[in-house]
Image (cartoon, rainbow, N blue to C red):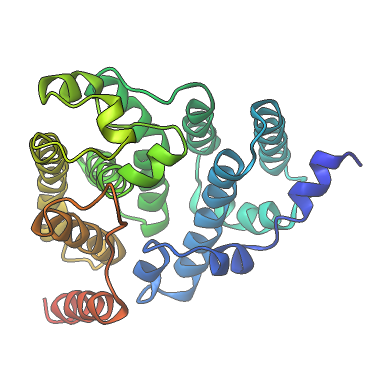
Amino acid sequence: MNHIDLILLKSGDSKSIVARSRSNFSSSFLFLPKEKREALRRVYAFFRVIDDVVDEEANPIRKRELLESWKQELENTYRGIPIVPLLKELKQTIDRFSIPKEFFLLLIKGCEMDITKNRYANFSELYEYCYHVASVVGLVCMRIFEYQSATSDKTAINLGIALQLTNILRDVGSDMDKGRIYLPQDEMKQCEISENDLINKTNNIHFESLFNLQYERAKSYYNKARGELTSDSSGKLLAAKIMATVYETILDKIKRLHYPVLHQRVGLNLFQKFFILTRIFFNSSFL
C-alpha cells in the first residue's frame, strides 16, 4: 500500500473529521432526523477532507496526487468496493439517497481550481468556482433533504453561491495570506484598489465601495433562494433555512462593522447561533 493510500486511511471517520472542523455547516443539522443528520455529516466530512488537501498540503504536485487518490477511491465506492473508512460510511448515504457521482467529482474539480488559479478576472469566472465548491454541496443536500420541486435545484445553486460569496468576503484577509484573491479583478480596478493595497492592508478609502459590491451581490443570491426556503411548508428545508440565516447574519454583521475583513474574521458567538437555531425551529414547528 503506498503512502498516498495511507494518508487516505488516516483521514478518520466522519465524526472525527467534523469534530476537527469549526464550521457553521454542522450546526444546521441539529434538528434533522438521525438518518439525515448522519448523511449530511458524512457528506460534509468528505468535502472537508478534499478542501483540506488544497489548504494544508504545500506541494502542488502532492496536492494533485492526493486529489487523484480521492477520485480513485470515489470510483471504488461507486463500484461497491470502498477501502477508506470515510468512504465506507459515505457509500451508505450515496445508496440511500441516490447521489450522483458527478456531484462529488465537480466538487473535487472546484478544489483543483485552487491549485492552478488564485485570481479571478470577473464575476463570471468567480461564479464558476463558487458553483463547483458550494452550489454542488447544495445539490447533494437537496437529495438528502428529499426535497424536489421545479425550482429546487436552482434554489440549491443560488444558496450555494450566496454562502460562498459570504465566505469570500469574510475571509479576504486570510485568503490573501495564502496568496489567493477571490475579489473580481475588474471590480478592484473599478474601485481603484490594487493588489498591493490588499496585501499591505492600506487604509484605502475605496475599500468600502469594493466590499459593498460583494455584499450586495451576496444579498441578491440570498434573495433568489429565499422564496423557496420561505414557502416550504414540509419542513424538509429546515437545515437550509438555518444555514442561510446563519451566513446571511454574518454577512450583515460584516457590513455593520464596516468590513473589518482585512484584519479579522467576523463570526457569530454561540448565543447568536443558538438564537437563530431555536427561532427558526419554533417558527417552522407552528406553520
